[in-house]
Length: 420
Image (tube, rainbow, N blue to C red):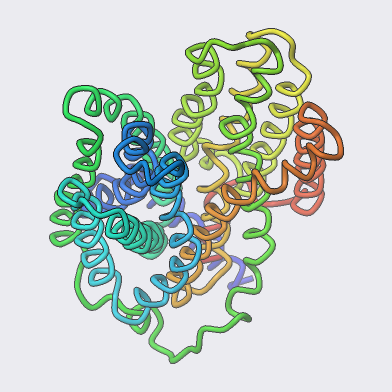
């Protein structure tokens, strides 16, 4: 009876604390919260700042007939480094502290990104982009780790959502503003956007306390191994599948719309862009939604919306239906990463959070990388329309499986707070 009463009191206290400080920007951690939100936004600039410069870059580095291939490699090469090195930078942060890792990665990010403004050699350019990818993996993994270790309850859920929303905003702004920079100042100008890492570096320097290593979160000595992350592996696999789905409109959508005789690039961009626009709002709404329902139930909504959206997109014959399909995908795209990050943070010990968040970065980029490979196999067997419809059906089936597995989850953040 006493134990039950203590648990009830703890839960009540936890809920009240969440009500008092629902905003992660309230109190003395506002600058830290800002740095954690802007970190993922900087990583979103890695491919998107380069995208508007690709045609002019291809002409600059024609290299015979391979100018277009080289320009595409400049854009995509950092993603490979994000996949490979994000877990490693998570381990570095766990050993040497989040402050050191974040500051070093932000410095490398700013230098390697903006150095393209002066570089003339193609090989040096590729090397700088690879270095940028390594630093980006460290920034994103460390930002998520800081959110998990320094915030709890509703403030943490809101920050996870805000981080995804800000990343979507930065990506959209980079595409529009970067194109204007190319038109007025040349193809190198958008690479100056990476200098935005410097004010974030200053915010991290002032807000992240030194000496926050793994031992500070758990005084006992632990060895990081696969057993520490065993509860998280199914969620990494699910995130890869969800990422394949969320990138389908942007990667496969142009070809689908072309097959529907939508040949105007502006119209295609408007339809496909609905995914990113809706993702901004759904990610921003994630924290409020988590006040009412659990992360697994949010995950059910995300997966079901994404499956329904892809199915509608595959079957649609008019622009309004296509917009609706992409918008449904955007709901899932905005909330999938924060909901899975929240679940993994709750189900893994604090000393392994750095590696756990690094693996989330790898899973996200792996899904993006695998999309054309997987969909090419589907398209060979079924055709493009049926391939997208099949992927939508798979995601809808996954939503049912997740619902069955978590049919009785806690409905309030107090349960998660009690678990942690």
